[in-house]
Amino acid sequence: MPDLANQRRLAAALLKCGEGRVWIDPANQEELADAVTRADIRSAIKAGVIRRLAIAGTSRVRARRHAAEVARGRHSGPGSRRGTPFSRVPKKERWMRRIRAQRDLLRELRTTKKIPPAVYREFYRRAKGGMFRSRAHLLVNLRLAGHLPEEKR
Image (cartoon, rainbow, N blue to C red; front, top):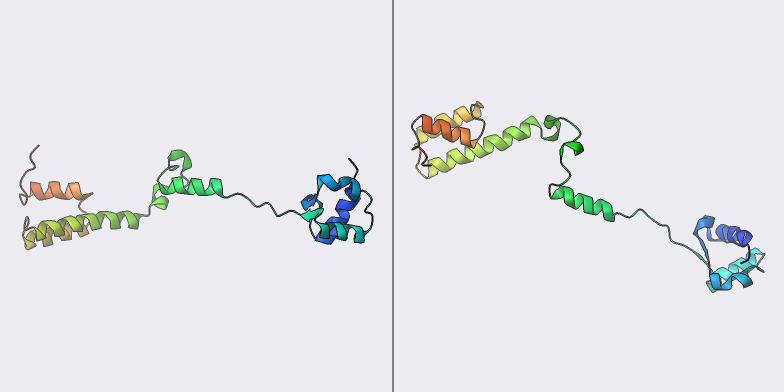
């Protein structure tokens, strides 16, 4: 197997790439040992004995698979968390989720005539003031005030 370091260097200069990207056909290495000028290398490139390899990029397969798993809710345990609970889900967003759920419940109770508009308005204002932790807490308070019948267990 001949030493083709000089041919590789010339080919890299002609192909405008690094020596690592120069591919030399293993079957034609003996004939290429005689190629000493740039013209010889040019003709070898034209013949396809010497080629420039494509740049090897970073594979995104693992990154895409990981992103798909994160979208499904994986990889979110305590070891993966950076930041406080407030920074992960801001206070305002938590408030919006909570108040929307409570207002939806109140609206539903009013439209189905389970509570009168006056009670709806009173509890809407209480919800706005942050009196209830959740929908369940709102329902408990409605039952305690006697506006809804007790739930059967």
